[in-house]
Each structure stands twice: as structure tokens, then as C-alpha cells.
Image (cartoon, rainbow, N blue to C red):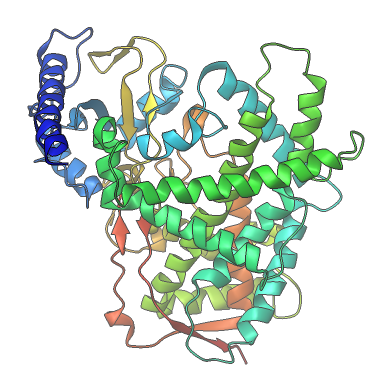
Length: 497
């Protein structure tokens, strides 16, 4: 035993020395291309002194103030170009959309997916999966039961659950995740879950915890130092385990669908994918296989559950902190919809204030401030720099949503950002919570519909009540990393008279 320890210590030292030497060589050797300026990295550690894993977004903003809207930073041994502000992000993701269309590295979840599934794929695989997914979602939206009808039905189940709280304090987290998840579940899996279904509740807890882990410091450290941390025990492995459990559930559902598949009558997204697999089984370049089905279905299920429910949860807090805004929404609902019929998506065009409030909630909550990482698919000239093929790029969506050039009060909750002088809804090109360009969120249309229909239905029926004075409500995220996780809180709902 003592001999083993004695041998292990110098071996670890040698490995660390080799890693340090390799990193120093990679950082100091002449680079192909000409990258933007940035802080000088330390060997292996990169810019760890400037980039704090527990608040990476604010660290990037501090570097922006010093180096400008486009700069290079080293996350451990990994070199990344960061884009800040609407102009820089638009120039990359929209004006040079093809060049910046690659998916960058996100090591904390890459080890679960290995480049499979629509969200993390690249090249021809990504093009096939995205084209198919968009078509399948669009077809379900125009099927026998539209997406709008599914949302309206789920909103009524939510109202029933809310009434059962009888005005008592409660945590809205799983009320919201259950109802929102059931909308995407009905598309991906072909049916909704009962709110008390233990399997469903277990899935939602895993999704909620996964988003928390993805945003925490351990995942940020893993993204920086995956070359070492993948071999070490610790908290960073919890995210891997959670995602594997979610993948196992989806794989089980896919297998059940396969065993009962009717090629002429698809029941859900999984059936559509299986039918496409059958159509292309003789095509050697096809990307339609189980290896891509499971992560693609999980991408839709996860994304369609967590981001909208987190936005609504944060939205409740903002409205309770600004009761005057809530009252104006109530008045508009009463004037346009009344109390008797269900809100419909057609109502949105007649409700500019409510629409503006929803946009402002999305802007201020800034659920995914870092955005998903991109990469350039070829050597790319950008703003006088030359980014070599494969360079990872972080388009900071949070910096766009709070760009003072496009929002007069970027740090203040102000629905006026989306209203003109006449009170009509006004678009703002810097409103990019779903990203932009070729990698824009697949579920944008569904999410926008959900946010309007849920908020209108809830405020048609209830007044939101905080447990303390509005001015005491703290909007600080409980964790800020990949995502901004809303703080835990309890609230009351009082039926409107």
C-alpha cells in the first residue's frame, strides 16, 4: 500500500507537469489566424484569475469593459472568443450566419451526448436533424389538436391545481414545470402525464436539478478543465448521472413506440422519427437512428420544460414586485378577453401591454445569459480578426438583452421598452432570448405561445400575492452560470372577484 502511494505521487506530478507544458506550448506557439485581444493566460489555468466560475457572465462583462465587445479568453486550456452587445452578436450569428453555425464545446454535457441529437450536433447530422425536427413540430402544431389547444387544455389543469391551494402559501416551481412539460410531452411522447404521476414528478425533479447543476460552479470548472476532471470523482459527475437517467427514460419510451409502431398513423414525435428511420434504412449517410433519436427527443423535452417554466416562475416574482404592472395587465385582460372565455393566441395582437410585459419578463430574467456556444465552420474574417476553423465562440445573449444602445433602462423592469408613444407594441431587434441565426431555438414559436396563454389565463383568474412587502422581493438568481436560476420563494394566489 505504501509503495503504491509512493509511486502514485510522482506519477501525478509528472502528469500535471506534462499538462502544464502542453498548455504552455499551445498558448505560446504561433497561431493560425489573428484572434481578438484578451488577458494573458497562465499555463493550464488560462484566465482563471479573471473568470470566476460562480459568476462567469459578470466576469465576461468586466473583460468587455477592458478589451471591448469582442475579446479572447482562456477557459483553462481552452481558447474562446466572446461576443458582447447586439451589434457584435448580430454581425456574427445573422450577417455571417453560415460561418458561425457550428455548435461549440460544452464539455459538461458533451460527454452524455458525444455530438448526437439536434442541439449539440454539427455538420450534415445537425442539418438533417434540425430540418426534420422543425417539420415534425410544425406538423403537430397544425394537426387534429393544435399546439394552442394543448396549451389551453393544460392551462385549465393548472387553474384547477392552483384553486386547490385555497389562497395558502406555496412554492410554484413544480406547478409550473408540470403544466409546461405536459405541452411538450404531448408532442414528444403522445400524451400528457397526470400531475401526481410519480414517474413524471421524478423526471421533472431530474430536469430541475440538471439545469441547476449545469449552471453551478462545478459544471463551469468541468467545462474549463474537462481534460483532467473527467477522471476525478466529485460533484461534477452528478450532472452526467442525471442526464443518463433522463436518456434511459426516453430510450425506454422509444423502444415501446418501436414495438407498437404503425407506419401510417404516427402518434408523436418519436413515431415520426422512427418512420423516418424506416424510410432511410438503406441510406448509409442517414442520421436517423436510435443514437440520434434519444438525445433529440430529450433535447425537446428538456428545453420545452425548463426554460418556459423558469421564465414564468421569475415572471411571478417581477409582477409581485411591481403590482402596478400586474393591475394594468388585469385591466387589459378584462377589456379584451373578459372573465368567461379562454384566452386565445389571437388576443395577443389586441393586448399590447400584456405582450410588452411578457417580452420584458423574458428580457430581464435572461434565463440563458451565456447563450449556447457556437463555433466557426471555416476560417472566418470577423471585425478585422481571423478566427481559425473550429474556434469556439460565446455570443452573450445576456449582454444583448441589456444593451444600453437598444434599451433605455437596461437594468430596470420597464415594459415601455416594447411600447411606442401611442401604447402600441413595438418590436426591438435586440430582443433575442431564443438566440438568432441558424441556431435559433427550435421551440421559439411554441414558447412564445405558452408564455402568453399561461400568463393571460393565470391573471384572468388570480391576483398574485407576495408573502412580504413588494420592495423586499429579491430577484437575485440562486445560481448564475449557464442559466440564471430563479430564487426559491413561496407565494399566494387569490381568486379574482
